[in-house]
Image 1 (cartoon, rainbow, N blue to C red):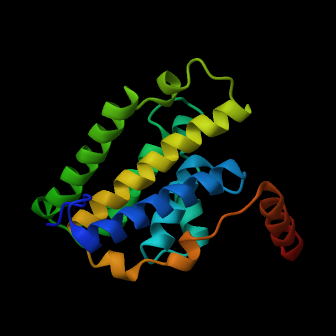
Image 2 (cartoon, one colour):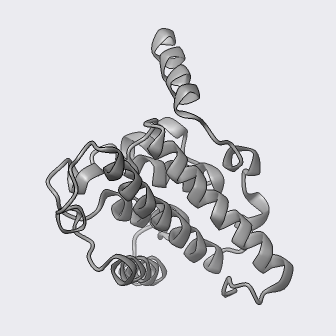
Length: 192
C-alpha cells in the first residue's frame, strides 16, 4: 500500500494535487448551493475518482444525510457520505463476513481522522454555536465536507493508487460561482 505524502516524489505531488482538487470541488458545490454536504462528498469522490455511480444516484443515496441524518443532529452527514464513498471504492463485492476488513479499517480510519481534527462526529455538537442557514454555517460545513472528501480520497488512493490515473481532472477543475450555479439550477428546472 502506498502512503500518500509529500515524500513520494511525482506520485506524491500528483496525489496531493488530486486530493486538493477533490476538496476544492466539494467545498465549491456546497457553498454555491448546488449540493448539500453529504451529496457533495459522495458526488465529487464518485465522479472525480470514477466510482461508477450516475450523478443522480450519488445525490439520491446521500440526500437524507445532511445535518446529521435528516436534521436530527446525529452523525455528520459529510462524514456519513465519506463512509459510503469508502464502501463504494473499497467495500466487499459479495457475501462473507471476513471479506469486509478493508472497508471496516478504512471507515474507522476516516472516523478517527475526522474526530481528531474536529473534536466530535455529531452534527449537533459540531454546530452547537452556529445559526443554521447563515453564511458562516455554510462556510463551516463546507470546510468539514472538504476535509472528509480529502481524507476519504487519501484513504482510497492508499488502497488503490491506480485511481490517480483514472481521475476525472476536467470535472475536478471546474469551479462555479453562485451565479453560474443558479443558472445551472434554473436550466435543469426548465428541462424538467
